[in-house]
Length: 206
Image 1 (cartoon, rainbow, N blue to C red):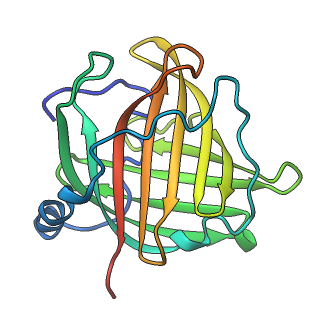
Image 2: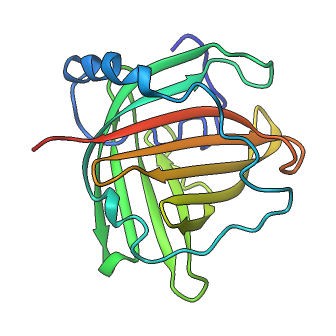
């Protein structure tokens, strides 16, 4: 990795997610990279927006094995349009009747591994998404939200290079075999967002 990204949960987020070799995934990256959006999805929510509610079945679509292509800014907060692209894969499982959704895996060209644990609060009807990476073993605070139709929005608080930031995840279901994810940070409480990571998921063939 040419530039280490901040040591917070988000910079390594989704760090990893299941087992596929670098050799087998690199061709996927070259084929799918061109499909990654070139323009960040800005202004999904105004400052002070509260995370939406959702449903216990929001992440049912994600159960199974997936390959995905990451496109991540090499340098944040400088108006850069210089992105790095790299492959990964994951396996996702549903637990406790759908209340818990877990994925784990690996970025084979980066050496990262990690796990996302999603927990559904039945009373609040919201998901909390937690990240654990293999380099620290720390369970980080969650981003919280849910899906409306095929679009999921999740908000949280974090730090980036020691500075407090708001964090926003956007999920888009694209039918049974594809999904889009992106991450954005805000330094001004949600007035302006910089999208710094896109992921395009494609369901792995049996």
